[in-house]
Length: 118
Length: 117
Image (cartoon, rainbow over all chains, first blue to last red; front, side, top):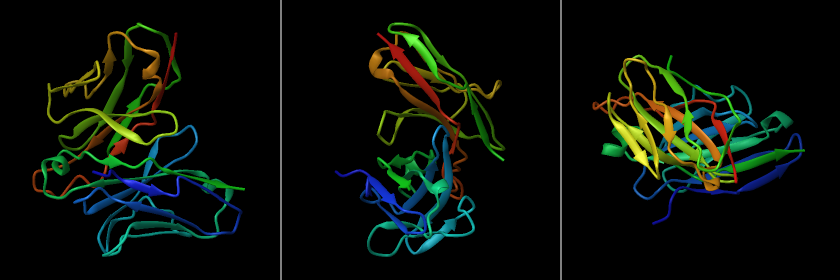
């Protein structure tokens, strides 16, 4: 009974490189959320996706960041041309749809991917 | 928009002390309220939740009561342990039975709790 799986757990990139973070939701969950946690700060919502659909990307930076959740495979958060300010922990969470857990807003989080930009 | 305000840390206590972490919220509707805990190097775990006014969530000795009149959801524990050292996040969700809401959680900034032996 696997939970939300994120990989890689740790990623180091040099400025200007690309970072790809993957998230496999819990079995039976079709909704994925990405959050960013900057050092000494709380979690900030980035994007909410269903399979093949971006529902809300109001928290995504306008440039360099993109997210997808294809019909098959994990959700991917992609950061192009990374800068030092992108260094953070990126958390993925999932929820089911039309279930009691969904109605109460409970999300199930992965262990996060920690991006360090040199 | 929705917002969550919680007391700033770090909060440092001795083992067996009484803990209160304050949390207040602003929401347009009738949100569900949550406390999440993040242990060092790990992701967030749901600690407890309450879905309507006067509900009390409880888990692992922690409690929080949904107070609509004061828009608060303070976290309490009668006797803390060193293993409770973590970051605690208060959060809300404006979920609706129509299924049209609940587009994620709104988090507070987190309170770092340090328990000393």
